[in-house]
Every structure is written in structure tokens, then in C-alpha cells.
Length: 133
Image (tube, rainbow, N blue to C red; front, side):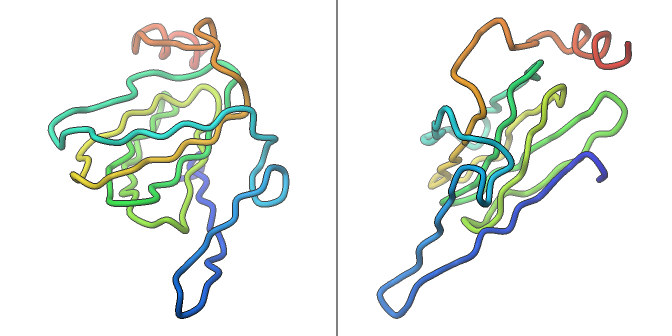
């Protein structure tokens, strides 16, 4: 799992509940330019199926669970995302897919760049070609 980087976020809280603080350039590897979250996905629906040329993302499953499939062109790794204190870094040129969403899954994604369609590689064969150049 050399290309898979996990982040542990500190859980703060007391008898009233828990809190996790995520701060750009403090406990993230990049300044955050965009935040989005995925929710309401059926368990039999898969998402992702792309890589990015430049964009970095940090994904945290803040509720429920899902499976993240990461592929650097040589190695495929599956990671079960099921903790609001664990994040996974999706670096550039890593193909990623999300599967097996629980009904209550909320997957929060922090991105290093604003949305740019030209940064996406959506064809797996093209991804393999570019990553193995």
C-alpha cells in the first residue's frame, strides 16, 4: 500500500459529543479550494471511475461506510472507509472508485483545486497509457 496514504484526525469532545477539526495546511497536505460530499447513494451504485492529472483529494467518511478502490496503474488497493477520524489521500494519477455505500453514508471530500473538467481522465485505458508513460 505504498501509494495509499491514510490520515488520522484527532477526535475532540466530551460527554456532549465529538468534534473533528480539519484545517488546511495543518492536518491536510494541501490548501483546501473545494469541499463536496456524496450522500444518498444506493449500495449497488458505484461512483468515481476516474483519475485526476493535478487535483489532490482527501476523503473522509463522516457517516456510514463505503469501499474505496484505488489504483496507481500497477497496484489496486481496496480500503473500507468507516470512520469520521480517518481520511484517505487520493493523489494525482490515481484511479479511484467508490462502492458498497451504506444507506447512511456521507463521504466528505476536500479538494486542492476548484472543479476543472479538463483535469479528469475518465477512460481507464487512457489512464493506463498516461500513468505508464
